[in-house]
Image (cartoon, rainbow, N blue to C red; front, side, top):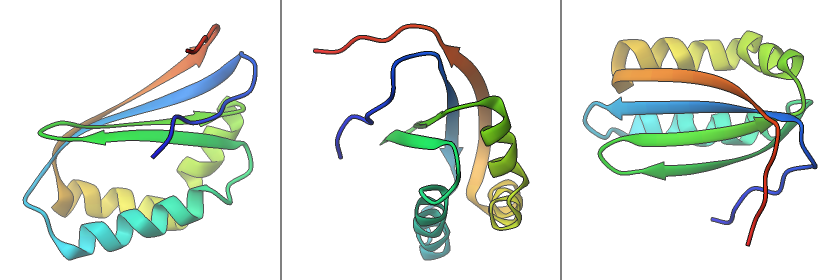
Length: 104
C-alpha cells in the first residue's frame, strides 16, 4: 500500500474509524467489492487504511457532493447495512475539509 496521491488542497477527507466483530469471509468479499466500486466513483481521489484493534480508513474526495453521491450508491448502502448488522461493534464517520497538506 502506498500513500494516496491527492491534488493541491482544498479537498475532503472521510475518516472511517471502526471496531470489527470477528473476521469472516463475507466481510472481506464485501470490502474488496467496495474498494473496486469506489475507485470508479466520480470525485474519488484515493484512500489509506490501517487495521489493527481499531480500523481507520481515510478516503479523499474532490467535493462534498461527490461524498454524498457515494453515500447514495445502492451497493454502498447495502454494505453499510451489513456493517451495522454484522461486521462492526461500532464505527464513527468524520468528514473534514483539507486546507493544507505537505509530505516528505
